[in-house]
Structure formats: C-alpha cells, structure tokens
Length: 315
Length: 279
Image (cartoon, rainbow over all chains, first blue to last red; front, top):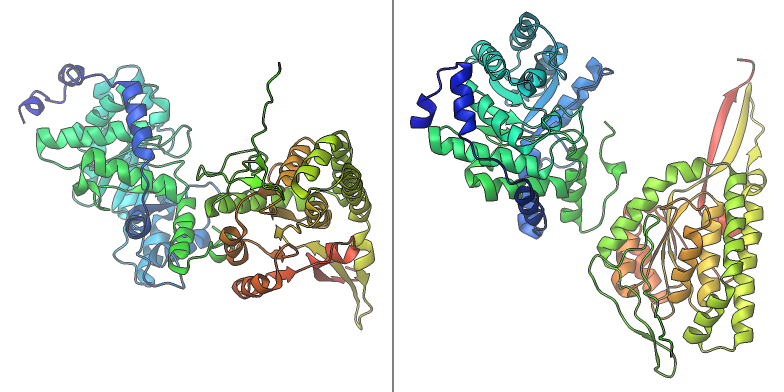
C-alpha cells in the first residue's frame, strides 16, 4: 500500500508515482508475447479454452447503422450462441452504444438473459472529444437505461500532452457516477498511445483512478489489441494487485477474430497475470466476428469434420 | 563444373507457395526406383487453409464476367506453352514415357485449357432457358457456379488429369482445391507456377500434394466444399468418400478422361427466376 499512499490525486503526485514505473523493454515484450503465441493447445484443453473464450466475449456492435432489430438479434445470439447446441455457454456481456442499452436490456430480460450484463460505451466514444458535462451525462443516460458496465474512453489528447491530472479526474468523475451501479472499463486506445511505456503509465493511471477493467481499444483504431500491448497491461494488473490487493480486469478489443487469436490471449492471461484472471469477471474479449469462429471450431471438435460459415449466423 | 540446383516442390495455397504447415515431405521415385523429388506432404490443416482460401476467392471469381474468365483460361494456355519443356521432362521422369508421348500429353493439356476457355462464356447460354409459364411473368433458368469444388486428379496422364479436372471447374466460375496424384504430383505444382503468373486470382486454385488416404476423407467431409470430383480415386475408396460427403449434399462426380461440356455443368446449379412483366 505504501506506494499508493503517495497519491493524493494531484498532478504532481501522479507524475511522481508514474515516474517510478520502470520502462518497458519493447523488444523483450514483443519476443515474450510471440513466444507465448506459439504454444499449441489441443483436444480437451482446446475445448475448454473455446468455451472459456465464449463466456468472456463482450459481444459488440458499435456501428452507425445499428438498428433495434440488429441489437435484438445480437442479444439472442449472446444468450444462445449456437441455437442447435445448448451446451454452448452464453457470452460475458453485450456491448452497444448508449441509446441501444434500453432495447438490449429489455430484450435480454424477455428471453431469459437476465444474467447477461449490458455494457455501454460512453464519454463521447470513440474519440472522447466532448466537454466533461456531455461525458458525464452520456454515462448517466447509459446507467439509467440499464447498463451495468460502462466502457469509457480516456482523453488521449490530454494524456499525450502530459495533463495526467485531467485524465485522472475525468476517470474519477465517471467512476463516481458508476459507483456500485456499474462496472467501469477504461479504454486506453493503445493504438494512439505510441509507446508501450505510455500503455503502462495509462494502465496505472486508470487503475489508480478507480477503473474496474482496463481495455485496450475502441476497435475503431488500428493497431488495436496486439499481443505486446495486452502483455504490458496484464503485467500492470498483476503488479497493481501486489501493491493494492485489488484485482483489476483486462479487456482486449479489436482485431481478435479467430479462435487462434483468442487462445493466444488466454495463454497470455494465464502466464502473465495468473490463473485467477482466467475468469469472465477479470478478463473479457471485445469482439463480434470472433464468436462465429469459436462456434465453428467447437463444431469441428464435436463432429470431427470442418464446418462452414453457412452454419453460423450472418451478423 | 556446374552444380545441379534442385527444385523444391511446394504447395499452392491462396496464391502463395508454402511448405506444409506440418513441415513434412515425402519421396517420389520412378518405376525403377530412382529418386525424383521430395514434394511437400500436406496435412489436414493445409487442406483447411486451402478450402478457406478458395471460399474467400469465390465471390469475386464467380462474379467476374464469363468472358473475362475465358480470357484468363486462354492466358494459362499461353503461359504453359512457354514452360512445355519443363512439363515434358517431369512427365518423362514420373511416368517413364518417351519424350514424344510426354510432348503429346503437354499438347493435349494446353489444348484442354483453350477448349474450356471457349466454353466459359457459352455454357450459360446453352444450359439456360426461357421457360413458358401461364402467368404474366418472364421465367428464366440460369446455370450458376456451385462454389468450392474439391478435385482428386486422375493420375494416368499426370498433367492432363490435373488440367481435365481444373479447367471445367474454373470455366464454370467455381474455385478449386486440387489434390495432386500421390505418385505423380510434380506436373500439378509446375502448373501452379503457371497459374500464379497468368492472372488467375489468388485462392481460385489451390493445389496440395500428399498422401491420398490422409487427405481425401477431410476433402469429402468438409462442410465448406460444395462439389467433389473423384476421378482420381478407385471405386472402393470412392464409395466411402461418397458416404462422408452427404452431410452437406455435395455433388460428387467421377469422370472419364475426356473433355466434355457436361463436366462444366456437373459443378453448376440451376437458378430459376420469376420476373413480373409490365412492372
């Protein structure tokens, strides 16, 4: 706890704390992530990993063209990913834009999906370019419509220009609104943070300010959830647990489309953060196309023959 | 003194020439037991990748105009022409035939491309129809490509067998995953090198070399494959493959080694359209 006591929320104390963080060995991080990505996961372990990955998905649609009908079919899929196989677990959550939260919540409740939370992206997603007042209202709206998870974006402009206090205060303010009604996931948008050092700093900043989850990306910027970035964030939550005895979750999002990608993520989680994080309460994968690939691989394992995209839904 | 530089025979998947993901290769020898080459021994994962590549290539290939597809088939013939010496040498090595016989085969293979190139923009006119119906509708039947076709190439004439399998499938607008003859695979890979340089889009043709018994069951059971040409499989193995291909109602055919427009139609399906008159 000692290190954390130094932080009183002031910019100076934040800067002093973040300066004590060691720099990231970029090549080392890339090599380690690549090395862990070569691990071969087969048969029963693969089956377990596929089901675990499905239960960790934040099934997402964040398009300007989203309609109420699309949200409802997404929710149905979240509850029963494979209509022909009831043994497939439901996904971790449904993630939609603010104004679709009510529709998603209502539909999930009506089809027996009460246990599936609805996550809303908030704070002028994806750019985060709006006044504080708008961002707070955005969050309040989502919660009042029934969102129990808030995915907020940090102000990358402020972070990159060194206004750490500004970023910190904003996360604090959103956290206050969420209080015990909603989990707060803080999107760092690592594709815009330039260096892994910045990813580490932003991770700590978010965790210190009260994030329940740190999330890589909005999915609107590439690169998104690359393995080295996820590795650095997993190290951050592991080390933060040492300091504070609080377990913060991690959510990679964007660019995870295949079962192989998802299993690589799970290997990272197990090897870097530890087995405690292999659980939808502490690790989520933001994705949409990934679910179909997981289902196809699951069919392959259960039938022995390669399946086809004709046998999963078109989203 | 000059040193012979041996060629590495690799697979052809999605327009690239990878080795097998399994890292395996196997030896092929001629009748007298002399070593010829070490082609790649594809695994079921290579097959999976090939099928995926074919599926991804299908929408653009099937929507290209039939004229354009025909031009590309002509182009393959042109490119093969320039490589004929290499084809002849490989056929002589694998089939232990005279240079004359090998040349005849190469000639026939090139002609086969030209023959099917001509069919490409004519087949739908001949197979399609305008149907008389009792109502104010136009009623058309048109032949459309099936999708992804798996081919086990006939191996008696190793190059001709491959071309007789591929050309009608491509002329129809399908994408192909071809399993080359286990004993005589070299012509297929050299043909792939021609395909790669003759405007055939990546993934439209994928060619695997390897053990027939290992790969054909996966070819037959793969749900992404819509049609199967089993010309290169003996009747006993074909029976088992037919059974495992019923799950997604694959069209399964086996052809004699001849050119025929029927081969094109075998991997097309008919769509009937009702179009209101006067709207």
